[in-house]
Structures are given as C-alpha cells and as structure tokens.
Image 1 (cartoon, rainbow, N blue to C red):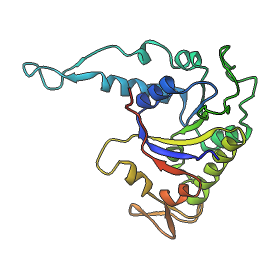
Image 2 (image 1 turned 90 degrees about the horizontal axis):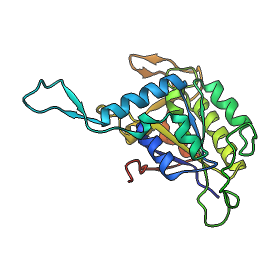
Image 3 (image 1 turned 180 degrees about the vertical axis):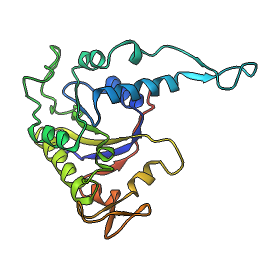
Image 4 (image 1 turned 60 degrees about the horizontal axis):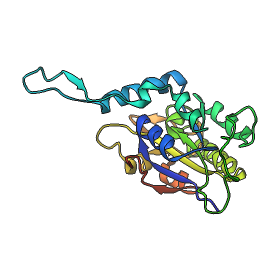
Length: 230
C-alpha cells in the first residue's frame, strides 16, 4: 500500500524546483490558490532567494540580484508541461473537493503522457506518482471548514482519489517565516471538532478542539521534505 504523506512546509520556489527536478508524468500538483496569487508568491520568493545584502559602503536597504533563475525566465506551465506534470489552481475548498472527486489519471483533457513513457506509472521498481496538494490547511484556515470535520473530509477525499489511481497522496503547506511557524507548530495548530460548532474567543477556540497532527494522522505519515536536494 502506498503511504500518504504530510511533508514539512516549503516555499513556492523550493516546491516547484523539487517537482520539476525529481517528478514526472503523471504527477499532479494541486495549488490551493488562484494562478495569479501563486505566481506572485513564486516571483517574490525567487527574488528573495536571489538577492543578497549590498556591500557595507552602500545603504543597508539596497539589495543586489546574484543570478537569474530559470523559473523566472520560463513560464510555470512551460516548465511543468515539458515534464508532463499536471497543475491545477484551486482557490476554494469547494474547488479542491470537486477536483478530487472527479480526479482520473486517464482524463484525456489533462496533460498527455510523454512519448518516451515506458510502461505504466505503477510498474515494479518505479516510484508512485504524486497527487500533491499545496496549501490544503491554508485553504481551510479562516473559513467555516477549519475544523476536524472539514479538514478530515477533504483529506479523506484526497487519499481516496490518490489510492484509486495508484498515486501517493501528499500534503505540503506554504512555509511561513517567523517564530513558531515551523513544522511542529503547524501540526500543533488547533481546530474545532465540528464545522460551525465553535468560535474564536480572544485568539482561541471555544468548545472541543483537535490538533492538526491528530486530524491528519488518521491517514498520513509525517515527514521532513527534501526541498533543498540538489
């Protein structure tokens, strides 16, 4: 059985670099944001990675670009389609659930198999393709679906769709900068047990709450992602 994974948070650039470098058809990347918002975040992330503080003789606020990035030079779709990787932008929980419910690796409307593909993706010795959702928790946060019930419903749909297609279900959250924003903090985040059953009270929740680790641990194993592998 293919084990579903929740991997440590990654920046947009790190995730896309990993997908383009180490994954191929029919891996599918589901981005829980609009195309415009994701591309803006990606560009901002790459610019931050490619700049360094200027020399001490210049104002401290000045930044100098160190190099060009192929992810900036080539459109996202061009890079992904060259590897026959499918990408979908899903800006709401409803969009994500609908996509998962209809997911099929053989949908002719999706990206076609590369002409060099040799054998089925599930052939012995081959790593399973990924059905990777980027920002599943972020998509639910600040909505009425931020609950063990709401998150669990989406997670179950992801695992079921991936398993039916012999894909590995993977969840990765966008990396947030700041104290207390690491992987453990993310897994320790609390959500009410039922959708609409609790409300925020001075930064917390009233009623019974469940942490993210327990919610997702029903289906997923937790793992540190290899986002900086060269």
